Figure 1 (tube, rainbow, N blue to C red):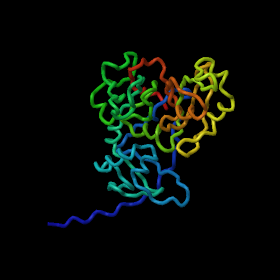
Figure 2: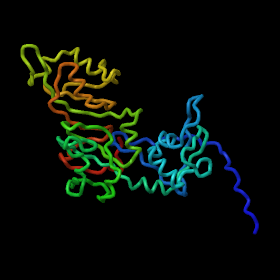
Figure 3: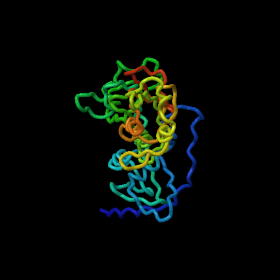
Length: 309
C-alpha cells in the first residue's frame, strides 16, 4: 500500500484590505448591522489594523473585535471546525496576529441568521436577569400570547428562540420601559461591551429634599439648584470612578430626561441621590436608534431587519 504523503503546511497569505462598513440609513432605528451574503462556503473577515506593538491574541477575542460573533459563539464555531486561519482549520486556543486571515464557514452564518433580538416593554416588578427575591425574570413574558399584534417582523415565534435569550443591559425591578433580549452576541457586545457608547434615554420623575419643606413633589424644577443640574451632567462619581458626561434636561417641572452612554447598576437613582433628588418613576424610552414607541406594557416585538441600535 502506498503511504499517503503528509499534508503540506498551511500557507500564509497577506490580509485583504479593510473595507468600510456600509452606513445605515440616516434616522433609521437600530439593530446590529446586517452581515452581507456570502456566495461561497466561507465568509472572510478583513484583518484589523492594530497599533504598533500589539502582539498575537486569542482567536475568539479577535473574532469578537471584528464584529463576527461573540467569544462564546467563536468557541462553538472553532469546536465544530467552522473557522480557518490562513486556510487551515483553527484549533481551540490558537492565537492570531494582525496579518492573519480569518474565514468562517457559511454554516455558522446560517446559524446566526436564525438568532433573534427581542424588544420588551418591561413592567414594574420584573427583574432583567435571573429570578431573585421571588421576582420573575422579564424573559418569562416572552411567548406567543404577549407578542404585539402590530409587529411586522417576518419572524414567527418558536420556543427555540428562548434558548440563550439574555438581556443586553439592565433595567431594575422598579423601572419600566425598553429592555433588549437577544441570542446574538454581536448585539450584546454592541450594547453592553466594555467599549460600548450606545446612548440610552430615560424619563425620570423626581422629588427634591428641601430643608424645612421635606420632599417637594410639585414644581421640583423651581427648587432644584442649577448648579446641581450641572453636576448631573458631568462631575459625579460612582464606585470611586468618574461617570461619563450625560445629557440631563427638564422635560416638565417634575420630570428629567437623561441620556447616558454607560449603564452602571442603578446609575440614575444613585446619581440623583447625590444631588438631593429621589427617583419616584423611571422609564427607558430609547436605546441607540431603537425607540420604545407605542409597544404596550408587558408585550414584545422582534427587532426589525432595517433597525439599527
